[in-house]
Image (cartoon, rainbow, N blue to C red; front, side, top):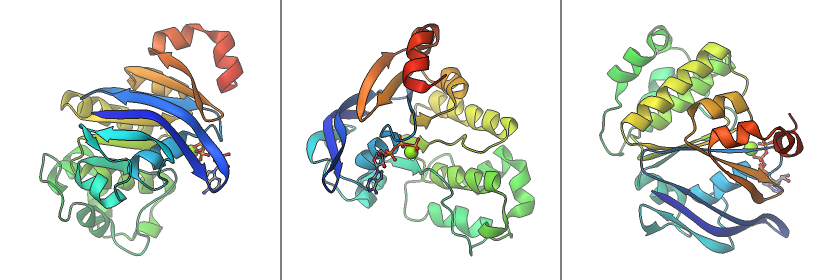
Length: 231
Ligand SMILES: Nc1ncnc2c1ncn2[C@@H]1O[C@H](COP(=O)(O)OP(=O)(O)OP(=O)(O)O)[C@@H](O)[C@H]1O
Ligand SMILES: [Mg+2]
């Protein structure tokens, strides 16, 4: 589904990604872990076209998307829930949700299914984005990405600042996406959450990948966890 092949990404002269390669198969959930500033969000930005790599390639279902504009990458079926809050503050919840699905491929996610999955949203449909709590805004951002019916969903620290129950809810969504064959690329600092949902894990440090394997292998290596993830 996704092949990232030796990408080098810069912010002007700052050489942040120093040769990142990773892969995500169809229906696979892959997590990227790493400390603050390791370059995790930059990987996501490089894939979705917000910060194009100077060297290397990104293939999405065998299409070379390295230099495509973001809207075309999204149209190919890549969805993103960016880090932090990312909904329209002055629009209502219903408008935020419906706007996301305009002009995008039809699929199993529509407003009825969203309301069946998150019953509490029903009573908030007419509230403005800015009147929601941080956790509710995060949930709407995830719903907005689901409404595009992506073939691959990238989530940049979805659990940040959320209560355990909502994190569990997000875990269930990720599992159901896997069952539908949707690939998930998850950036996380919440290790337990990543260990629970990921099939494979990459650990980043200073713009490079320093570990690649399954959650059990990583969990066993306490010295490594301490060194690269500060646990
Ligand atoms: N727009 C930008 N301009 C210049 N430097 C940037 C920019 N965005 C990020 N950086 C730098 O690139 C490096 C990697 O940042 P990135 O946001 O990818 O880290 P991260 O792993 O996502 O961190 P966090 O866990 O804190 O979100 C950091 O040193 C950061 O300061
Ligand atoms: Mg980040």
